[in-house]
Length: 170
Image 1: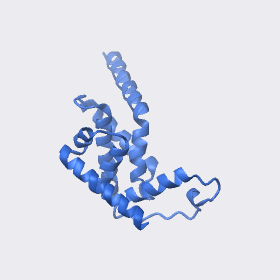
Image 2: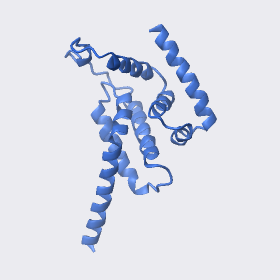
Image 3: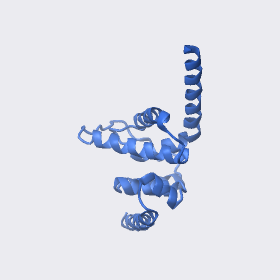
Image 4: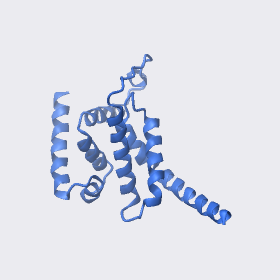
């Protein structure tokens, strides 16, 4: 009997690892958007994967796997930041790689600026624009965030206007 349980467990583990490999880019993208000195990218990534693993047995496949992953990744990152809000900020004493002038890449600079502006948004707005940039439909964004499709459309319009305003001011 224990051999059967071991084989079943191994099968579930392999299935889970295949999902993580397939959606690794999405997980890193969400974590990147929420990463801070007190919430390093790798720590957030590990927390998300751990929470996905804990939730995997309860995943009933009633929604897309990507929707389930986004929901858990966003909630994990937001919770991580809430818990860590009162911790002192870590300041690195080494020069940042981004500050080096070697090999200027205008596209990289533009994306860096965009993510910088997105980081100034509130948690929900940040989540919505991230999903929009991932080319999720309004329906998928609504399902992941728990908002209505109409509310998603309204919020997206406002977020885009905020970003345009930030770009003009910056």
